[in-house]
Amino acid sequence: MNRNAMYGLMAEFDSPEEVLAAARRTREAGYRQIDAFSPIPVEGLAEAVGFEWTSVPVFTFLGGLLGGCTGFFMCWYANVISFPLDIGGKPLNSWPAWIPITFELTILGGALATVVAMLALNGLPNPYHPVFNVDRFALSTTDKFFLCIKSGDKNFDLQRTKAFLEGLNPHGVFEIEE
View 1 (tube, one colour):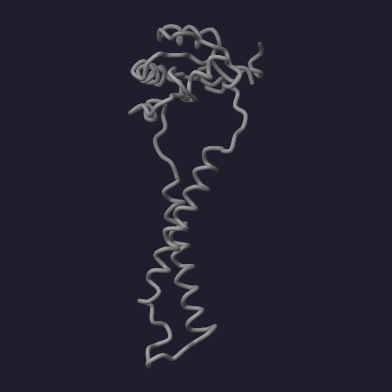
View 2: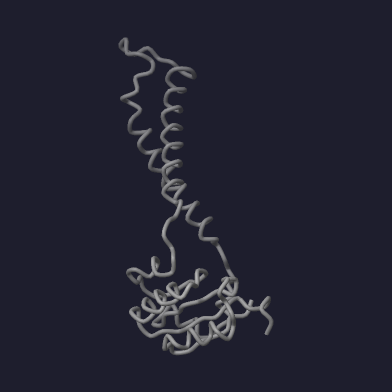
């Protein structure tokens, strides 16, 4: 199998503690393009594989800001420009009445921006991924834990990486074809 047709190597583990320890050792060994798959949340696994920061909160803030400004502008335009009504001598731009609309559109804008950013940054929807080529990967949704080292890593060498993964005492090590 040539390197171009290989996505990487994947090791199977039985428990969250094993995959967490393996991810930490893999990171310490100098591998940077690693990923872990788990049927349950594992505390510290994201940090162990090198996932440290995401820009989703920035998109949430910007979406909320845009939503709030949109709500305030809609109320201002409707009450001051489009259909001004002088009721009881109140000013046309009586903004306290617009707080609920502004608040609701702030929440809506932030929520929609969060969902869109999360989907886009995670590369979803993704109906195909090379790890699906490994038959045992179907167990990642029930009771097995997997650690993958991608072939694009600068330290990736098929024989050395496979020996390294086998040294972590996994249930098995599998080659992932593209």
